[in-house]
Length: 327
Image (tube, rainbow, N blue to C red; front, side, top):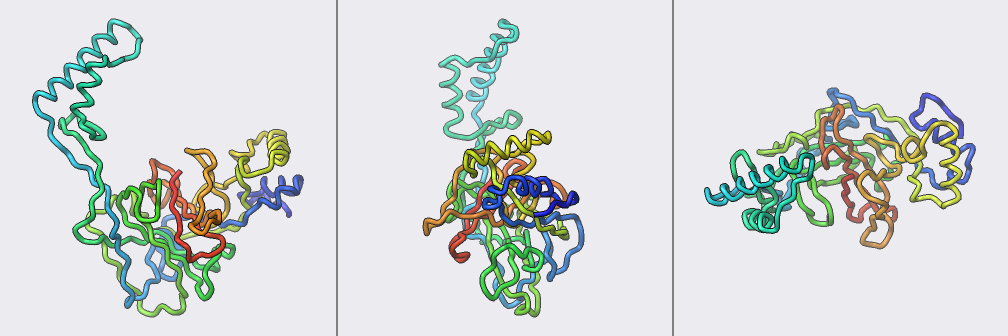
């Protein structure tokens, strides 16, 4: 492989040239590079209009939504809570810089007042519970991402299709169907043939969306790259060589040379919150990263406390259910 210093993966390409054993672990990917714009329905885009047939039902979310319930504390419970605060502050003053530690009695009192709730709002003096409830009316999903095959040539698509579309319900969901250990917007993934779409649908809008899940319309500037995995995915001897190569050039392998960041189709997933935990398909195959959606920047999304939402698919059969993951 040759090196082009204008490419985002130029250092990784140089590393592969010098350490050929890494070539077997490299994956093709496309950095999508969204910027605010005015995309059309036949363009690749983030948050733009979808090439969706007017005669095809628009997808809706039927999964339970996360709802926060508020319950007013009694005057007696508020007084107990404030008295616990006063006692802890007095102990802190007496200890100077010492830490505030609740007594067993105070801890028991607060546990009773919380009554299983997740938080107490000290401005309104309300307990806040987080529960899942089905919406009275199924919520229409919103367009998040559309990719034409010609813009992401390394991304697999089912035979006879050349368009990938991702929509989601702009609200929080706790483990929606088929998504264990996941918290975030419930998503729908579709593939279609662009030439089969005539009249384009005018999508409905959800009634009370969370703004952090409504992407600002962006056009894409895709660039094909080679992506390398994190150290945990490599043989020990290759890791040692790769790290030594990076250090000799003032780089850190896992920080600068692997798992390219940003909106991405294909490639390797980075891990910011957890260790390596493979995601397996229901058929037993280890799933591969299909899409990475990033918080912030021009689309102005915020998933998982300014993290990334990743879509994993089965390398054996794209029709198998996909998995969502937030890091």
